[in-house]
Length: 112
Image (tube, rainbow, N blue to C red; front, side):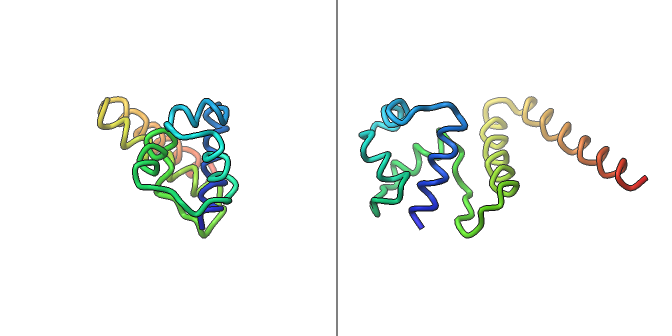
């Protein structure tokens, strides 16, 4: 299970443009521990680190049973919009409205 979690951490870290050393420093852990976590070579992860990973990567909710990229991206987007909503409700509403409108437009286009 932690191997899949580690793979997801690495994937999201790289997507955000963080190097291993840089991201380890942000998380306040050693680069070797982050490497072991990402490769599934450690079984230990504490709750505080999980919280920091969530803050930096919007990691959860995470479905470890599937590698469905669309579901993973949508789950991450949901978490990011929820975080944005706390900081800027208007911006979050704007994004949600545009997403819904765009989906509706594409669905109607396909049905014609």
